[in-house]
Amino acid sequence: MKARVGDIEMYYELVGEGHPLALVEGMGYASWMWFKQRDALSKHFRLLIYDNRGVGHTDKPDEPYTIRQMADDLAGLLDVVGIERCHVLGVSMGGFIAQEFALNHPERVGGLILGCTSYGGPNTAPMPISTLQVLLQVEGLTLEEVYRRGLSTALTESYLHSHPDEIDQIVRWRLENPQPRYAWQHQFNAGAAHDAEHRVRDITAPTLVAHGTRDAVVPTVNGEDLARVMGAELKLYDAGHLFFIEKADEFNRDVIDFLGRAQKKVA
View (cartoon, rainbow, N blue to C red):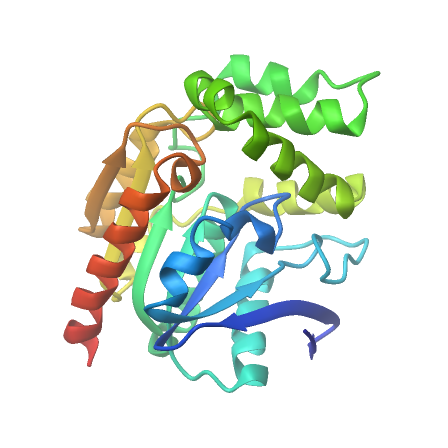
């Protein structure tokens, strides 16, 4: 479905029954990203799955984006679908969006889960040079090759080799509706400008920070620091950046458990 939210048309789906849970994806990824959470979590929550501005079936204006703007997009979408308060799960850049949403709309957040992310700014551990080289050296490559190179940094080598059909499906999803380069750049710039180091401690929602111990995109120390600064729970998984794909069953159980406890705290 689509809804007018401010200056854009946003694509969204509502799936399942229970307390609402908004799923916020990372840079360059669309709502298909939650293919390993959708069925499992929709048995326990009413999922709001949507595409951020600049990706998927949501509008992609060619103008600068900000993380605050994308957090306000979520607030506007919640207004349209009639959800006053929800749990929020954001990963990678979606973790930035979830932080801003919790800071600027605290009354609308039940439990908060921040995955494979950081508080941003100059005091975070940067992406490893080896990963940057893989992501930036794309001249002469087809779009499919670019996407496969990206996955080679986001998943562990063992997972890539043991799940070839799954990797092929992810690539197909991305090729079906490729993100324009300008839109990727606008999302990238928004993420690069995010700095909530001195603000995340003001988030009042019960928070779980989740991270892969072999994350080659957002080093694990970032998640550890985020949890420490926020006083949040921390869960680590033997996986790469996309730990919620590699360790989906374990992560889904942790989501259900944590949000169940969070719901009792905020009820």
